[in-house]
Image (cartoon, rainbow, N blue to C red; front, side):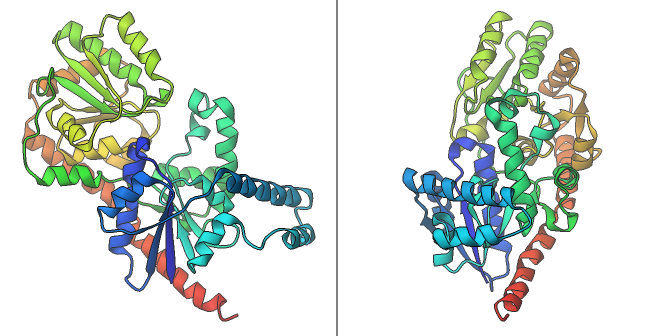
Length: 412
């Protein structure tokens, strides 16, 4: 069997980029060696990153004219299926007028690909007409929190809904990061649970590599060890930076006037609002806004921080949370059923309704009131709980089972 793996993730995607790399490495390292794998990408940054892992990439490049052709072809087929949904006569007529395969799918056919794996939510998956594929779904947030601008404005809700409604039922398998997404796919899109597989996010390979060096990283200038919070998250409204700013306000005014918080990530439209809010409450000297920084810098900021608070409205299983657990840093997440089922009883929980109360927790961390040994013990237990939810083995078996299907339909 020949498996094709395609991604167009950009490094600016942050956690999404790193998780895509992790999923690719899992496949490469664990799938049965009888399965041939060819990697495809259209993105220079991920090609360069994967080459460091000795993975050769077939570069895919479609110009604007070719992308327009793809769009027109898909629009025509969609129109015909909408007009006469129970008959394929119109479709057969259309296929005689148009090329047998589209430009995107043809790339995989030329390499004799039997099954395509998309390790991230891939927009181009909608152009796969005949080859079986596996899709990854990171969240169904447009269903649970549709009121946020990034999930509502510019027809984002409609676009996401159309996308998931098409790719998930058609997919041979669907990969999700946690049980909450699995339940949502069953509830909203009627996807049978047997073809949905939980593979939790894992710490970036670069972060793990930094950890094995066992060198104490240099602290950033202007920061004091354990006297700041670190939150690596793109500036979306659902990341809820505002709550962490309010926590920092209480820390500064009640406990330590020099306490800081460090934000880092790409601006997704919310950064200027946050900067203005910080100025309005007189906290400009205590809140640091970085854009995209290196993996080494991220590792340093993690290691010297007092801890990580994850107030994001989308979760559980966010990459910063997993990385903080791996690095034996205290972690605090929202107290809800989804998080409890994912992290288990040893996680630190908070309602995130009272910044003053959260500030007290952070101050205790910064003062060393929880021993490093206890933090490490708790974090290892949490990571063990997360790992126990993984359906990785069943997922690999699902891919290998496809090999049997190929033998069957290729003999018919």
